[in-house]
Amino acid sequence: MALRESGEDYLETILILHDRTGYVRSIDVANELGYSKPSISRAMGILRENGFITVERDGQILLTETGRQKASEVYERHLLLTKFFHEILGVGMENAENDACHIEHDISVETFEKLRKFVDAHKK
Image (cartoon, helix red, strand yellow):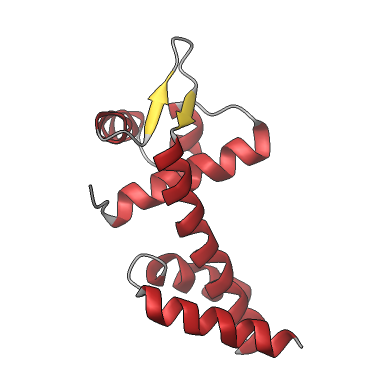
């Protein structure tokens, strides 16, 4: 199933929070994104139904293998785009982060791979 931008944002946030704290609940996602608990609950239900997450009895949210792979892909695009905008183009960090967050959902595989090669070559 293809995810919308918001679904990718939720998965990316779950990944980041899990890496940061080791434990993620719906309220943590709501607080991180600034969304209401009912909005997060609905989104978590959709992600669970589509096999991207599981929710434990204690409320802990875990990424499935599919969810982890998708979240990692989105986060990798986010990091590379932010780096490109900030370090190579000289865009301020806040704008680099915001722009990366929007573009990470729409960039083609081909363009992303070319950008990755460019950033890697620029480091040398």
